[in-house]
Image 1: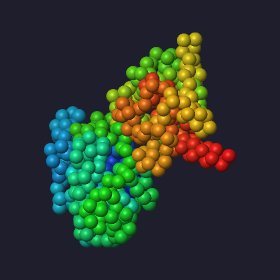
Image 2: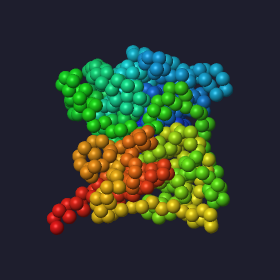
Image 3: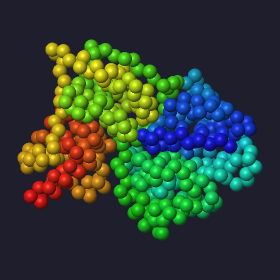
Image 4: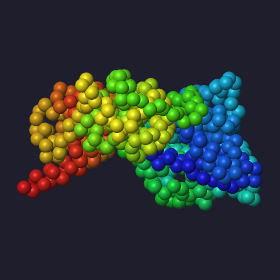
Length: 479
């Protein structure tokens, strides 16, 4: 048996390419949308992808199963365990007409790819239709499973959060019932041998849990002994309280992903290749009607940028920033280092931001300037100056950290709206004066400040964030 985890560091997402080396057939479990990576990896190892499977309708990325079905004719294996709101609706909608080759799965079902067997176990809680796959390498002579692709059920050190149906998808009253259902699902682990490896769909940094470990894989026995969320299941109420407490605010795009992955993601047919645009084309854009994403260093952006553009750094949070501040209907233009273009396009389409209309070389940004087109700037204050601003009754403070971070200490009088939910909670943003925006270190707040300025707010970013603020306050107290 061949098995490789294909990991996306930015979304902390793991897909699994599993192949039978005797027959040359392979399956991808929980693929992302830019499927060329899986196709190439399979070819490099003498395999051909004949199937794709999903553990559930994902919320944090656009699934690649439909893309694989179109590109290589892969058979699709998906859950049929959910109610009417949790059924896949794209299986009979091939681009050229007709239905894909697919099989709807229920608890206890089995299927094979080459000489590898997959057994389905229904594991509701994270979502109603969630399933996992027990994997047995029959071609190697095994009669017991080697691993279980757990999706968003069991992570290393955590369990999949049960609150997303309410906090992301907006289905009121689902949080606690989902947590109780997840508690009941834990009993399924007792039916799986302790030695079976756990192959989760996410690792540390994912918003699909609150305390995911950085170790890529584990075993069922280890997680049963040491996973804090499982250990909290000493009683149902204790588990419910533990699993719901402190979950991070999900990014705005999560609801779109649930929708798209249910009704059917648009088929890319290949990675989009946006054209290079001229400085004249940039000048013709209305930054209130299109999204201009500027990926230059923060200091360069704040000192001079195209009015209305959004600052988003090229790092592990880029997908989350883009998915939180750019609508999936927006036309997107990138100010970017050409060497980073492909990476950025992949990041955007993975969270459903497909309308990438063009890019401009960040090194040539000065070409934008002419007598009628000037740069905008964005104010940033040191902790010392911020303290002076806070003393002004006309200055309001917006803290864009998570609620759990805010509860651990904040600037007096600050309003808290996590940056991942800011675009949907603009009615909570203080108005009537200058707005001082802070986070922990100044990055999330800088991104948020560029978004708020685009909305017409008079904003100041707190340089160094609450860490710099606390340090300055401590020094002042000693004097």
